[in-house]
Image (cartoon, rainbow, N blue to C red; front, top):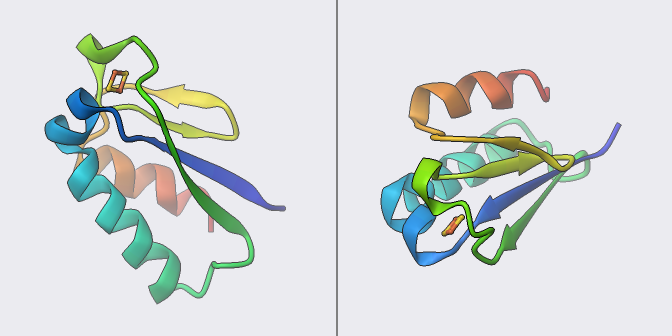
Length: 78
Ligand code: FES
């Protein structure tokens, strides 16, 4: 099954961790050869900056995504 990972690239989310999260996701995809099942896209600010950084998986929103949380989310997508 193909999944879409949407990373909020608005300035708040980007500064609060999505710059690093984006790199982690890119590395996870390439290290696990998941290019065909995980589609990575960027998003504009979702107007919910206060509990960012946000990542959306198949339109499900995750708040305050730090490295540990992201790792668990990604493991669930293998
Ligand atoms: S920058 Fe991500 S919700 Fe505003």
